[in-house]
Length: 160
Image 1 (cartoon, one colour):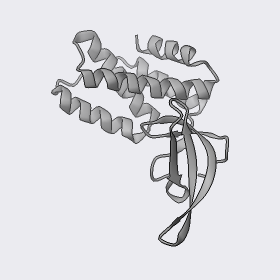
Image 2 (cartoon, helix red, strand yellow):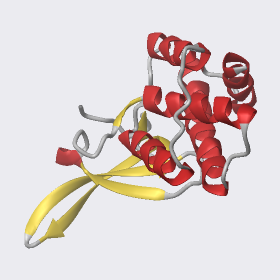
Image 3 (cartoon, rainbow, N blue to C red):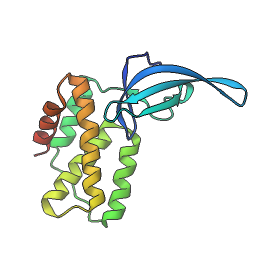
């Protein structure tokens, strides 16, 4: 997919980004085009090779239908909470977040929220829960043209 300057997209594990430019860099004597991305959450800039954008997981912001499906994932109560050790669970959740899939991130948030109601989360799990929430809030807010607050409230309500 080709992205235009000013367009919003999603970069795995960083969330919603704005394409702020396309830059050419010389690498080993050959010119390569890079998307210059600004992460909305913290202003960090990322450069992604244009020809490898799909491979690294850069994708369009979710559609209205995909947002509705994400809310369905959050509302799903027929979920078996894994009884693994926290560090094994953490690794599994981290892999899901790294995929950049809105649905995988929603599963992480849902599962950690459900787990939190039955036991204390480890420090790493609490941070991951917050990361998953932040990733979803930004994408829902951009996709639905809501404030971050509205998006956060709807996400919390869906998971309650």
